[in-house]
Picture 1 (tube, rainbow, N blue to C red):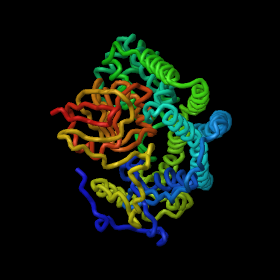
Picture 2 (picture 1 turned 180 degrees about the vertical axis):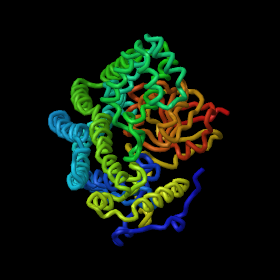
Picture 3 (picture 1 turned 45 degrees about the horizontal axis):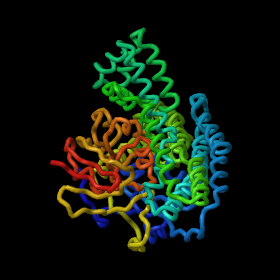
Picture 4 (picture 1 turned 90 degrees about the vertical axis):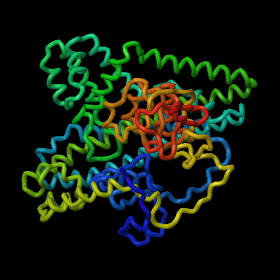
Length: 529
């Protein structure tokens, strides 16, 4: 159980004293937990630096972000040709460049490299992460422009709210939905092979490697094993949150195996039919909206919708290509360096490498390694201690509150501290319409996915694309972070799943197993007992 922490109980260390004069905010959406030193140095910090407008610092193993005041956007509508141009750049330039990074870290034989070559690869990785941050901004900006153009146009022409606008581009799919459908297909394959189905169900509590070994011993189960390994090749280079030291699904496929079992418990669920339903509803929404408009207004809205559709998949797809695959494939490089240091007696275990700073790792490879095993162990213990603490929401200079009642809510990060006066009711951002009921399943991390059952309401701090398969079997989603254009919101709408986001302290106020009702249209969560 974490405890509230005052800034005075949270000692700060500034490499640059001038940084203490800036306001740094905790980011519970992307980094809600303590972060290893190497994850910060080689995974997060250079990536965010590539954005060009954000800065990160690490305090007591928690990540904080500084965002300077942004100039007001230019008045007037966004040129639609700029949105289409961004979509073409994503498909024709950014994806190929990212896939080249992907293949380098997937196929390079790091074992055969000298220590000097490995050190050079670490330098290359830092540069790649900066470049990926740049590509991330290039990819997501047109997506944001497309969604905001749609929201503003619908508001102007019909008076409709954000949900009314965004339902006009639901159901087009993306890589996150594709991963969920592949897992559903695997469940159908397992159901057709009794030996595979029976082993999966019988070994639900066994480690994933033992499950796969048992399946491999069954000749009849080979088609399932081969298809599952094919799935991991494409979708396995991911982990639950942004932490470089976390095992990927390729290394520990417990989460996808749990999801296959969840689909096995839903024999009547038809994934393609559910996706067609979302597309059909979208077409109905578009038709109903167009009927209310004059011909010139219809033409205008149609052009805006087409631009939004052109970029609709980018939010989830950039995460698949940039944030996940190119983010975690370099574990092959880093773990090779860790094994070398372990063989040399510098570290006690290869995974201790994540407790080193980038410069320490580089120096150790080149021969300067005294005391690193003890240092790594000390940091491991420090991280475990700080993991029990709830960090302050800001450090450095006090935040300047500039929001007014007339200001739009932050559509990505969400609006915090929404409260209800009604007993048993929690307030948040209504992010996906509809009402869902079921027992709350409060998950701290995706590693707990084995506890999630069909019909449960997912209650968690934050979600990332690897969580998406759970959306297919949930009855609703509640998170403590996020606005209507966050990952959880976009994914919930693709599944037609009621969602309320940015519910303050949801994981502490809602007990595991407690029945709840989630109203994604009105942004309320009612605790029913």
